[in-house]
Image 1 (tube, rainbow, N blue to C red):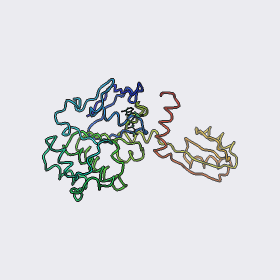
Image 2 (image 1 turned 135 degrees about the vertical axis):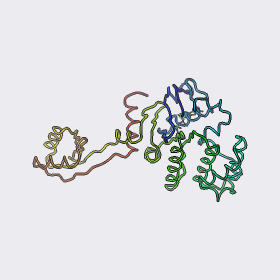
Image 3 (image 1 turned 60 degrees about the vertical axis):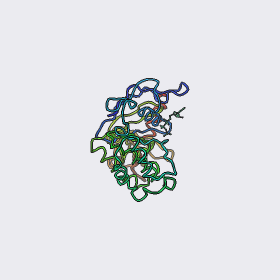
Image 4 (image 1 turned 45 degrees about the vertical axis):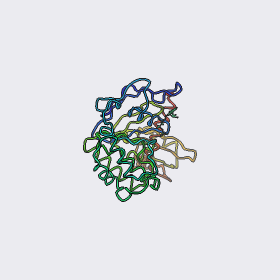
Length: 300
Ligand SMILES: Nc1ncnc2c1ncn2[C@@H]1O[C@H](COP(=O)(O)OP(=O)(O)OP(=O)(O)O)[C@@H](O)[C@H]1O
C-alpha cells in the first residue's frame, strides 16, 4: 500500500505537485493518469525518495522509502530516467542490481524469463529495441520480488502485442496481492491496463475512482440527426428530457436520449430524418474534456 498525504513539491515557487492525498491499494492495478507535465513523474520520484517534498509525506507499507533496508525487495521501480549502461548485457545489468540488493542470483534468469528476454540476455543493451529496453526495465523492477511496483510510463515503446503482454503481467502481479501503480498520459491505453484510476493535472488530483466507474460517469454518447423540421423536433426533444444543440448544417446533436427514442419522437410528429447516427466520445476525448473543464473552472 502506498499512502500519499498532502504531498507538495515546488520548483521555482511553482507547485508541480500540489497538496496530493491518495492511497494506492494492493490487489489492483492503479493507473496514474495526467497529460504531459501534470506531475506524475515528480510524484513517483517523491515516492522513491529521489526528490524531497516541500510538504507532506509518502509511506510505502507504513515506511518512508529511505527507511527501507533493501528497497528493491520492497518496491520495484521503473522510471523514465533509469537508463542502464548500454555496453552491459541485459543479464549483467540485472546481476549488478541483484548483488547490490542482496537478491539471489537465480532471480536474474527468472525475471528475464518473465519479461520474455531470455534469448536476448547475453546481448548488449545498446542493441535492444525500445520495447526490449522497457522489458529489461520491468525485469529490474521485478527482481527483488517486491510487494509494491511503481512504473512510470511502462507502455512506452511497446507494440500492441507488448501492451497485451504487460496488461496480463500487471494483472497477475495485482492478483498476487501486490500494489501496482502505473503512470500514463494516454487514457485509452490505461483503460486496458488499470482497474482503478487517479487523474492528476497541474499537480492536483481530479479523480480517484474505479476505471469502470470513470468510464460510466465520463463516457458520453450523443446522437446526430438531420430533421426536416429542426425547430419542431428540438422542442419535442426538450419536452422528452433531452438537450439538443443546433449544428451549422441544420442538424441537431442530442444528448440524453437514445437514437431509437429520437426516431420514434420524430415519426410521431411527422418529422423526416435524413441522418440518425450515434457517436460515443472516445475515452481520450473524455479525459481531455475533464482536464479542460478544470482549466475553464479556474482551478489552476
Ligand atoms: N527538476 C526540475 N526542475 C524544475 N522543474 C521541474 C523539474 N522536474 C520537473 N519539473 C517541472 O514539473 C512539471 C511536472 O513534471 P513531471 O515530469 O512530473 O510531469 P509528468 O506528469 O510526469 O509529465 P511527463 O509525462 O511529460 O513526464 C513540469 O512542468 C516540469 O517542467
